[in-house]
Image 1 (tube, rainbow, N blue to C red):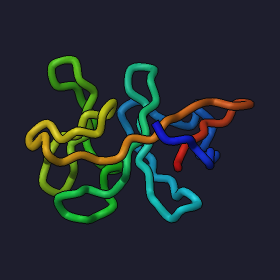
Image 2 (tube, rainbow, N blue to C red):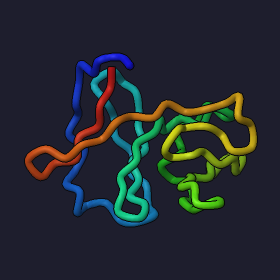
Image 3 (cartoon, rainbow, N blue to C red):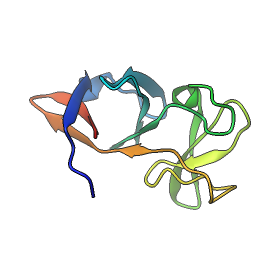
Image 4 (cartoon, rainbow, N blue to C red):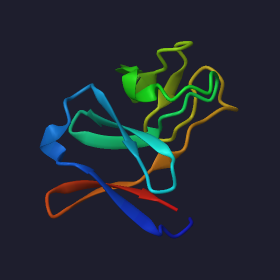
Amino acid sequence: MTALSTWTAVCAPADLLPGRGVAALLPSGAQVAVFLVADEVHAVSNVDPFSGAAVLSRGIVGDLGGVPVVASPMHKQHFDLRTGECVEDRSVSVHVHPVRVADGVLMVGSP
């Protein structure tokens, strides 16, 4: 596992709505999609690897067999919010970012 060099403040945890995504820009220029699902916060790359569009934060959040997923609004592929793996094509995935809460602020980690 690589060491994290940056934690970026995104919002207060109370600002997240269950099942709705928000996009955040990291200092590296990367976009992340942040989701609150069943009292757990997940952060993945906002870029849909199939279309190249930064849209996953607008995707539909759900559950496939107990796995929390987001469906891309572009081509409807589902991505596991815990691992980033595409359910329909396991050879494709999005980057998963660690999250933590520090002093009442949700932070997203990046290398």
